[in-house]
Image (cartoon, rainbow, N blue to C red; front, side, top):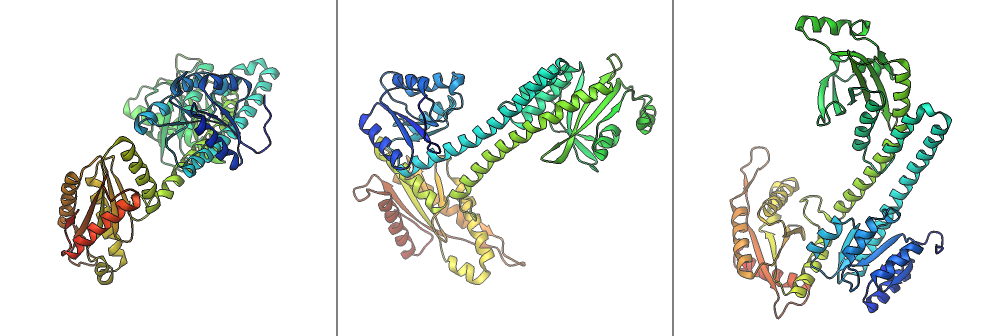
Length: 496
């Protein structure tokens, strides 16, 4: 394989456009990446046989094999299963994104792309890939350790098989489900479940059950399960070989007698487990009167399985938290915290994309500039907390009225922008009038028994294409001019 300088990520760029290939390669090299440029998809497969990069930047539309076929081949080969693939294309973004992400692409960037966006997406994919790679490496170390256990004792073969299955690329829920199924089969049990609970809890939650795979998040009263409560309180396994004679079940047996309950369960094991050093619940193993009762060696086997599997569970939780944190931070970076609409920076990026799409495909794009009338008076008279309530209410009304394809953003203090793709001026004005009316009919609750506040807005409308509009700045400026006219003519109006 080709050697790679330590700490220098290698990116394989594939595109049949030689000029674009050279440009992208030069940009990536200037930003510190080791770049391999390949002018065609067939040469790509040969390159992958020689050396696997840290990230693949793959064009969709190519004459020999298109990017979709190449992506299917890559995802169908175990050697390249974890390779992050960033697809690029001039195809309509919705169609291309749905197809590429459905085939296993890590991300999609439409052409023509902005350099800063492309670099940011590459960096994000490399960070995620590095995090997952390190987590998988730790999981592989665990698998090696388990393989040694197989060599030490054939009697633990089933233990190793179970752990091998749960140390793959699985979520914690998937690992729990596999554990109860495999432990039940290894010990020939008809009942095996996982119950989330902590010491002192009155209720527990059955997360998964071998005897009923459809049972999820089912609550149980712990006073009916003394072995679970005891295992949680002591923090150690509890074995009951016969529930009909165990002193622990004395009170429960009296309840059974009073209610005429016929019990089919014979023996029980409750195994407490910890995740991230916190007692999280118990694995609950049971046999019926017609099955072999559980013994001490069954406790040792199941306890060994669960304790060793906790490492895989914790690593899976780390991966899930990493993904969730990444998504949360990305959302915070583009969201206005008060109104939960897009912020101004995110609006500019989205508006650039929509303008480019409208220009490329000959579509119509309309922008509304919405401004609250006399908002300073609201803040001065009722205070900023009421002013915040007003902004939140207006944001809610706007978001309720728009389509899913429309864009809503807070542009300034009391200004909102609504972007309406593929909407002509006539339809946009009608929508703006309806929006103006909805807001004028709305009342915002006052403080301390004050009368509810009524609101009005003025709205400016601008549409692309237009002879005087070439850029996003032009579009915003024209909408702002229209808004100024609406204000000058008495407010609570829509002007285009």
